[in-house]
Amino acid sequence: MVEVRLLEEDGRTVKVLLSGIPLAVANTLRRYTINEVPTMAVEEVLVIENSSAMPNEVLAHRISLIPFTSDIDRYRAPEECDCGSRLGCEKCVVRYLLRAEARDRPITVYSGDLVPEEETTVKPVSPKIPIVKLAPGQRVEMELYVRVGRGRKNAKWQAAISSLYESEQGERILMVESIGFLPPKRILIEAAKALERKAGELGEALAGLLEAEKDGE
Ligand SMILES: [Zn+2]
Image (cartoon, rainbow, N blue to C red):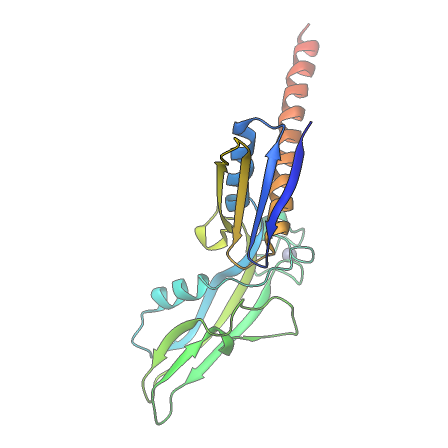
């Protein structure tokens, strides 16, 4: 029988003891906590103005690495949304603006300077992540599109750093350290759901194989 025992938990990390599952499955669960859990990050940046020393692509890349607290009950990945719109709808995109200008002295622009277009719970995990330095007279203005994605699509959506190891007593322990998008326990649950979906797909595909065989007779 499968058993999961909570060993340790804090805001960032969860450690569970897994028993009754094959090593390969435990390892897949570990990989799923990294690659298959939906999280939210800036997917697209529309640069309106950038007179900083940082090229547009570098600036866009830096912004895309900011983790956002991810409301995955409300938002879904664009490819899973029924709007079919490239720009997205209220279920698949959160729009942010970044406008900053250095007047008489140099300034540093931080994640806390990002302003949502509408009230939202989807926010940078910390307001103190530095983005770009501006010298007097320089300014940046851009629109940001925060969307749901998964680590397998791009590392910027990677939900956690996870490891699987054996204790001295030979027990199998999975440790999940959240990057900050989601609470660590939620990451585990979402990884298990993704695993369940995959197993379901496999079951259906195999059942389809049997059906095809029957039809062929
Ligand atoms: Zn949509």
